[in-house]
Amino acid sequence: MIPTRRAGIDVGGTKCLGVVLDEHDRVVVEQYVHTPKGADAVIDTVVELALSLGDVDTLGVGVPGLVTRSGVLRAAPNLFDVQELDVGGLVSGRLRSEEHTSELQSLAYLVCRLLLE
Image (tube, rainbow, N blue to C red; front, side, top):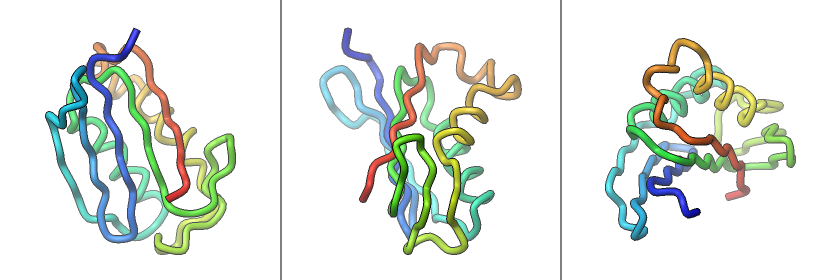
């Protein structure tokens, strides 16, 4: 079964771009925010952007730099003061937290896939 609404967030050195695709691969939501400085602020921004995209079935997150298979960003030359950051664990943990449960009720499953840029 192909998910109905798929979201992706691209974290870059200057901006974070979030998009949602419908079942016909059309962009139905597109938002961007400036990339902040610091690891905590980057995670906060990704979570806030993910929540602002609305109800989705899947979410992928791409970050620049050296990323392990377990989702740890080892080094990010384009992100200020970010290294050894468990992006996958922190983002998925925050999105699954009780605080955001009501906002994510229609989220069938969450996939945080970290890709090299």
